[in-house]
Length: 181
Length: 161
Image 1 (cartoon, rainbow over the protein chains, first blue to last red):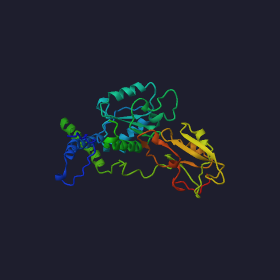
Image 2: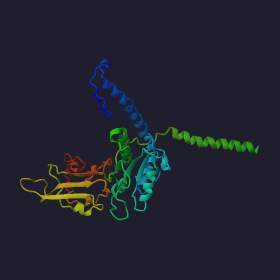
Image 3: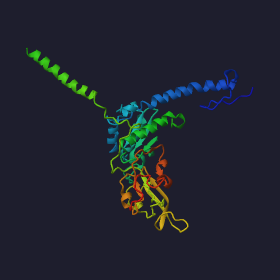
Image 4: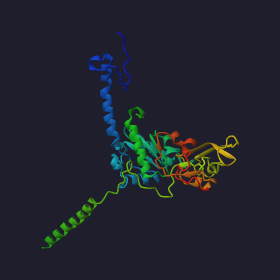
């Protein structure tokens, strides 16, 4: 009996038009796919609707991040009101502000303390690429240290712009194929 | 007797406090429901993403002088200019920009480029929703920056500068 390669994960292509027509391979594909994809979708739904950010701010962007958490913009509408002081309880790291060379090890430490799955938003110009401070004192973008999922432009970004980036991150988490992990 | 008076005062204090709570219960919430509802208008001076504007006849305003490149404090702009020829007239000056890139992640939206521009080609628009999954995607090229039709950026295409 020829060994058929296992179907690719996430693809369920069957030409059967009724259960009676389903072949052995179709059933095997069904078994290997349907449960995991569904659980994946539920898990990603749960993850993206309760992203808890780590509570720390680096510079002026942090003020806008605080404003995002307040009543007017209310990040709680997206399930992220719980800014966690302990990185171990946080899923999302909003790098809000410039990362100086002195702060770089600390930022990296916070990221490494966070438990998987974890995501990073580089908020503002300085965190994304150094912005106006193209000099020796600053890390030219926090992605030199840690992987970044969403970059938000603005100096500083409006709270709406941060929410826009946040919604983009939720979009990213919703698509298992485009996720980093 | 004294304790009774204290009790009454304490109960009244609680009711007074709860009155504040109940008053807020019937006020409309201050929350802007952002993705569905946006704040009516940004401030008139607000500086968002850039647009390269056109004259009313569709000619490009940018003459490739690179003054915006010089003035930009974060070195976010790159311009490569080329000469206009009678067969290929793109702008109303001697030169035009063949390549015009703005790194929206570098840009601090100070508006110096808008001030420096002698023809009023570069303007900062109203859009603030700038986010991407990669740094490269935030480098806006000339086709992305040029307004799709004269006046699309919200500036009068008939204006002098």
